[in-house]
Length: 328
Image (cartoon, rainbow, N blue to C red; front, side):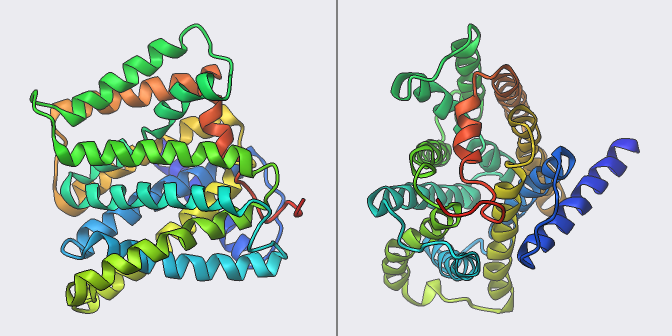
């Protein structure tokens, strides 16, 4: 009971913080508010996937990406203009690369959500720190602790339990892993962009870059891409709303919470995925999925707490708090 009350308190605190940000108010924030925002972010992103699966099961994936891209771009442009952030940025090539990687990752994620159980799809997406932690020591020359590579291997074995639970590779799970890999690559580009760009400039370019490709695919899909009823209209709106709340909570929360604690709390995402899977689809996770989740979350948690997974956290953290920083 105490755990439930504490979680509710953190969630309500996070809602209050996001509302203040949307009103343009600067509120003093400590680690507690940061952790609350991280919990809210994890829940919001998992709920985004749940809405896409529940309300838009037959909608072409690119139509979902397109509607989200248009609405998210509009919202972030409004915020950027209010904060005086540049829209073009100083490094448009890198901004475009970050956006295209995000587009690929998001496309894979929504597709896997429609074809996998919600819990498995969310967990695979949240496994992107594995790839960041594996590549960073090689490309960015980040220091790696003694247990670094052992934890990465363990995490990959956990992913393998989900990808091929009965010995046969599931193609839909491979798509989920590909999306996670592109997410990790996108976060690594943010490390470079954060040195020259305002955080809101980076946030604008991500949904903006998803529009051209998804628009073409949506036009090709024709009438099938159009909302067929009020439920599907609500689905598009709720996917965007939860993504927007999740992104604001993530960017603000990471700037307030310590890196290690932020990593641990963000791992609540797959837990939310399993809970929403049970609540909305009455789907109980398979033993292999539960075992894989336990291995992946434990390995990622240890990577974050030990500092070996610092890059996976820092690359997200450097995209943070456009509401408290001035443009450089």
